[in-house]
Amino acid sequence: MRVLRSLSTNGSLFSRTACRCILASLVCYILLLIRYINAVASSANAITIKPLGDRNSIFCVGIVSIARKDVSYIEATVGSLLMDLSPREREDLYLILFIPHVDPTIHPSFESKWISAMTDRVLLYNVTAAEIDHLRELENEGGSFREKGLFDYVYLLKACQEIGAPHTIMVEDDVLEMDGWYHRTKQALVDADRQTSRLGASLYLYLRLFYTQGLLGWNSEEWFIYLLCSVAVIAAIWGTLVTTRRYVPRQACNNKRKGRGNGHISTNNPWKPTFNEYIDYRSALTSDLYLADVSCRSSILGKAS
Image (cartoon, rainbow, N blue to C red; front, side, top):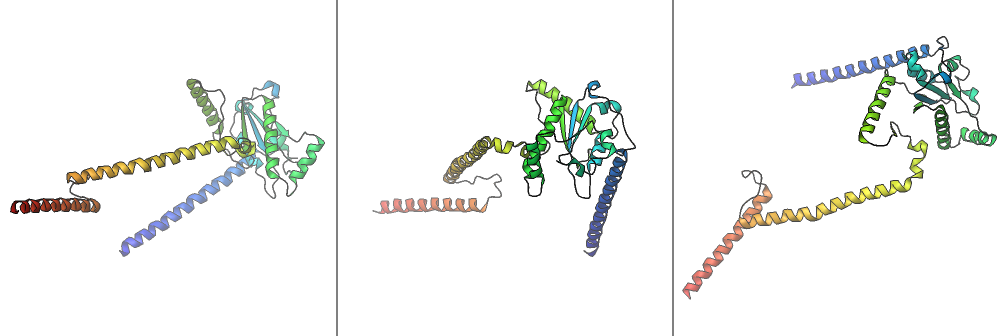
């Protein structure tokens, strides 16, 4: 017993040590990857981008980047998007960096040289004075973050729509794209287009990877449809349960009564009857013996008389 306990203790310690080593290695890898991406995104690694008229972009990649206190993730996000892409693959992307601030100079990367070198367009607010005042109120502390987030999301979507690219990718400014995301995405679109054509379905494809209904406002605009669907599903489940409860137990009781009248035990294994079936069998046997005894006494008394 002591040997087994010591082995289990050593095994648990080994598993904990192994998990810690794996987590430490993963953290070191992520830190090194971010450092490498930041080096790629530096101003010394400027790249040349062709004008829009000479390009036929497949994807419009939109990134909304807000100013954070004492930290900035946008360099790593842009670097992971463009890392290891060939010049031809880079031309397939039209990258828009949107700074959703009334005063864009508060963003730490606004005046950085790498923004103009690595992005195709730095999007700023180009709205009326009344809208600027309203956005300033929303941007201040205590403003409606949800309303401003919806406005910024739609504003960037419209900017991507003006590009004319067949596909739009919305990326958060604190996301690291995995290695090979470009080729995986293109292959997934090819497979989806082939399957859609084979099924004869609509040409439109909506691929939902994150919760965007809140930003688009569909949860409030189509609440009645959601309510009807929810009520229909609940009613269907409730009706199924009630029907099952109403008819299935009654049929099972009838089967037990038939089995009791025939004087046998209905079970999957005849050598292992359950306790309830044993009691039912004893009750049926006792009642049969009692009836037989009563009939015998009646016949004897009849003869005697």
